Image (cartoon, rainbow, N blue to C red; front, side):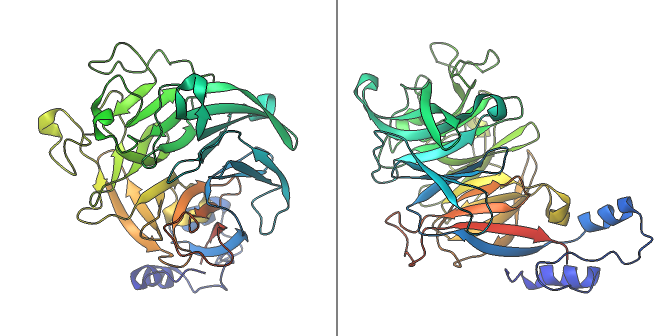
Length: 390
């Protein structure tokens, strides 16, 4: 179990006498009402129990859960591993392949998402760097597969052309919002000018329907030839996207300074490479709501967590960091993101994905075999963090 900072422990001790690690607190009186008990639990700082649930993986990048609890994990080499659940030691059901993946540098198989109507259509989406001569060579693409039991077939391309690939800065996190739109983060692949090119899909946050068609309420970017998949622009290497209700936030890597969290608005320009940290408003651009300042942590995947088990942390944004090998908790509004806690720093190495599972737990992937980490014998891993009340 993670040792919380002294200040956080003081809050727990003042709230109640701790129970054994990983167990929930029994109500103070048997006559307390359910609503009062729930209200009390929401005011408490949760205890966290962390456990490795899968080991021996090869640069896992992202996680998605099917409605029946099956866990899909992408490996950058081109595999999608399907486990029967996110429970410790859950059986691997299948290894599914995405063909023609070109894994080099930071490129390869990256994001994965489950269609909101998966129970009816079986659709799974991936974002990958692939060799496709008909699309212009090696490019980043979003593909749709139809999953049937332990096998799948490619159902089509969501985005086949227009997204350049590179050794670095590919982005490629994909997520569905509550309205059924598919969002794709796309880096500028090391070519800074693409982020400010209104007719390029690189250095952008993209938003499409599940079949790749363009929503009619997507913005028209100034200078673009027309309405496209681009929803916002001026991004460097956005590796995370997270939704808090209808609010959209992206998480991206800075160069040698200024990792960012941005509140995403339609048509907004987030400034890369024109400015860093502040000064966007004078240029008609948007400043980040959080910046790492003079250092970089290599912030990657992020997710908002909800549920009574998370107590007073319900509604927080958790962000995985690669370079800093940590998990960071933020409180977030559209105006500002404030870091509240630094967790697991150095315990598991480089952290890439952060996803809340259907059981309410938080799931992380490590990225220690990506050429930049120090791999342990058990790497790479999937970690499950279960909240509870002290």
